[in-house]
Length: 191
Image (tube, rainbow, N blue to C red; front, side, top):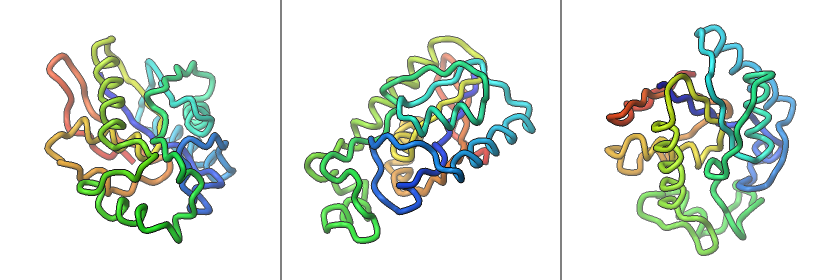
């Protein structure tokens, strides 16, 4: 089995550098083009998906729809973005001190009160990945969000010790890994 993880395309909140989290905004025109381009790249690489999973948030669903038109998409709550709680919608260009500290050192700074903890994000993504690994073979696409995708990448590479949390993942960036009964291979950036 080969698993492909894609971050959703751009939204208005991405463009304004706002903390998006569970806000349910659609892709903007740039995001639609990014998702369509990802679909073209999948086809150029000869990648056809046997199953497609998505976060229930519209931006992730639309990314899967534009990347793989006409395909059935299975929604799963575990793929949703981190819950930012009272910080939802925050302007990231001028964040309060507690957010600045958290974003400067994800490994040693717990999420501020009211936000979902990164360990919980990693746990739910890990549970999902184990479930699909045990459910068959083929090519699987997972359309999700930046922090959720980092949680998956952290789960897939426990030796990273938190280094994925600080990585920048661009809109419609894709990583892939192999999965079998023995576990997962190290994820690699596809595009």
